[in-house]
Image (cartoon, rainbow, N blue to C red; front, side):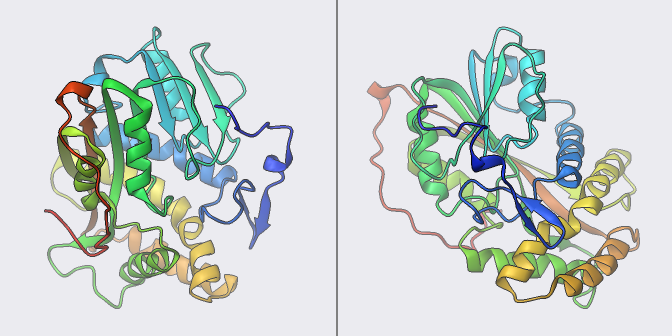
Length: 319
């Protein structure tokens, strides 16, 4: 990618704050750490998503393999590496703000450090663009969808996997005075104040359509916070949800709560102790919805849609 940052630059001189480590490129825009604790959590979350989608890396037709794949917000690169290993005839490029990917990767996989909120300067088109757990990362998802559309060859797919905040509960066991409920609500509040919504998943179908994508498909799956469900498969999902959540509770909120809500680091740490206790409580039947949303770029001769300005309704849901 022309204009991407060399790893020999200050991009790896990471920010240290409240005992956690954060990215340096475009300093401060992404509020989740990039340290070892978070890297391990991301790798666990990868297993969680595989359990949710029953072993599938994606749900769009590119599950059969793609030639050129772009993974935006690749994190540790675990998804990109597994896709490259599974489809050895593909080329996979992972891009992230942080250089936290392994040194030894398949020959058909590589990584770059860049800020994907800026203009995309890739010199080649892709036939599959993938993003996962990027809620809260972008100010303007409309622009991201448009850039993905422009970066795809005709017939290419853009697929997004993400959770929908806040936490849900159908039987009243997630009480409003519980730390887990409050943690979820405070996350939504703080993220909204930054302009980087974490309630975006339900809005993405219309955002993709506004960007020009067709045949948009939405799949959602309950992701229990722990092993409270009676259903065996949902218990397995809940097991991995909890394993990925517990080490991330503090990291997901530390920067948001201290920078945006004005909490002290000690307040966050003490609060998260109770949140973790609630998360492990099987008498609390909380869950998220996990989403897969994908769309196809139609051939130029069949495009009839003109892009129009898009405004967000951060409280809108389509299900």
